[in-house]
Length: 296
Image 1: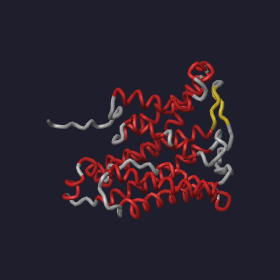
Image 2: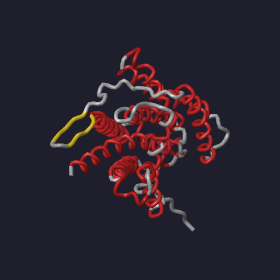
Image 3: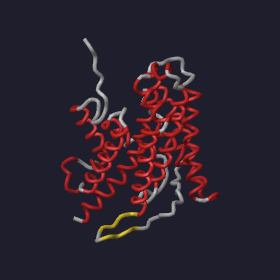
Image 4: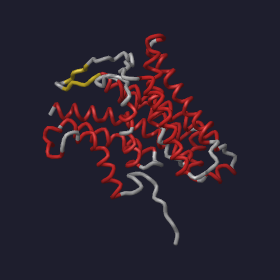
């Protein structure tokens, strides 16, 4: 029973981190209707800056620098690439983000090389044991930080002028522009916030029990993509639910992998994508996504 509880807590913790990443996908999609395939590289930017700076300036300033750096790169991608693209076709712009992702990831993996970079976090490999259940402090910290950030975002999205502007832009961009909402500012802010959230997620994807930041970190980040898709790309609630579903699925399937050998080795790695496929076959718009209705 203790093993099951540990797997559930670990799954919720990782699910909360995946929800942070999925929230980044959703924010940008709601603001611009573009699927941002460069999100994993923004995450890698934030993690790389934190890993490189923590020995010189300390962990917390380095983390702040990582968040600011990823937010800045996200904003620059919006201003220098997407805003200057001579098309409003969202499919084309999504393909453009694939190119941005390849450029950023290639340069960062070249910089990282074969190293595994430590994040210098204060929790290190310490374990908390309660009632026979052992949980890494990093997992508890991830759960708490993600919960605070997601709650803050949802409150801002609901009650601030920025949230109202984003919801209006997502509902009807042309009408929002006529009402005086500056869509370029909404889009720029969305990219910057998504980058900052990705940098925080990078920290918790690469701390204990993961050995550190390496070239494969961006691939790990892409596990959050099923979370955004199955939750519904235009739903902030869906991002949270999708992240938790993916985290729990991955944790439980990986933990009981020994009893699932008939499904093949490494089933825990592909389980999130299998769940996404099954849910999309039943609900093509995702669990909380908006279905498009066409009058005929």
